[in-house]
Image (cartoon, rainbow, N blue to C red; front, side, top):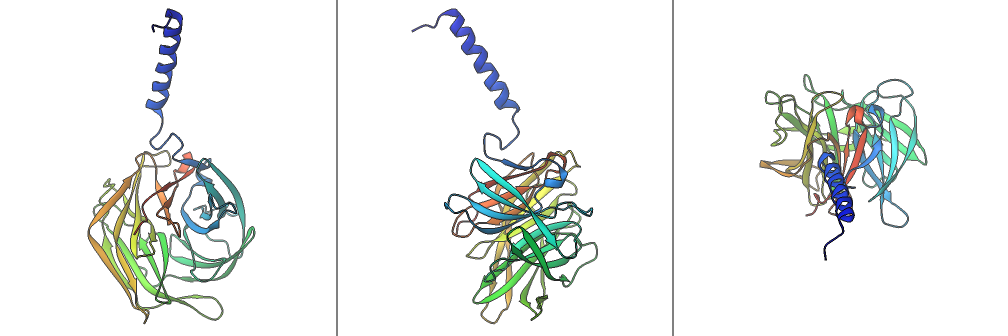
Amino acid sequence: MKLPMLQRMAWFTAATALVTVLGTAPAGAAGEWQKVGGDARGGVSGLAFEGRTEDGAGVHVLVVHDNKRSGQPRLSRISHREGADGISPITWDGAEPQDLEAVEAIPGMPGEYLAVVGRGIVYRLKVTGSTATVVDYAPLPAIGEGDDFESLAVVAQNGKLAALWADRGAGADRPATLYAAPLTFAPWGQPLFGAVTRRAYRAAYPTDDGSRHISDISVTDSGRIIVSSAADAGDDGPFDSAVSEAGRVTVSAAGRVRVTPASSPTVLGTFPGYKVEGVECLPGSADALLGTDDENAGGYVRNMPFCGA
């Protein structure tokens, strides 16, 4: 049945407007990316799984911010579920860090986390309610000349812990250096690291000048190493990023750590327009939660199925 002329004109106008909206929407729109920070102070520099929401439909995660001035937020909690996010600040109690870049839960120690700053200081935290108390802090071992750290993962296998972290690298002339070491703790709480191994890593995407080959690390239950990589042209972008499988890690019953790099990284997803700086495999799920630090554009999160066996 033909529509009357006025109805056809109205339908055409509405359809044209819809096409215009969809055509100009940023990559990852239509409910996929969910905004969690409105400006440069609210970007997501790192993520740590805290627990499931009471109804089981979402997750609570801790988020670090790379702020540098006194009094600016360092840590927040996001209650994330598809379609909605709740954000609340966490009070930092203790020596105030500059440039927090990554955070990770300590397996087997409920409410305890490690957070690292870009120059390589690791803070051990105890989070209770809305307060994060500094238990102790220490430098990462074997810091190389020019190293700039944005990533941290803690692995539990065979009753032992290991830490993975990386100098982010910069473009073709400086690959990332992926570090790994056994992890223990002194009786007073200080993180202690064993023998360190190093592996070079070059991202397959993005490949812009100055691209950060590793902007965060997560490890699946089976030992797959999942990394994000990012390109940043300035505080207003443009940004670009990807998540890839970089290899595998094992920890023996004796505590020896072995990292086996992938002969060629497998790109699991690319995200033009966004700067992914946080990737966290969610326990009991194939999903990774991704977080972005898009500088003046704020921060976003979304789920992607990157962490299956």
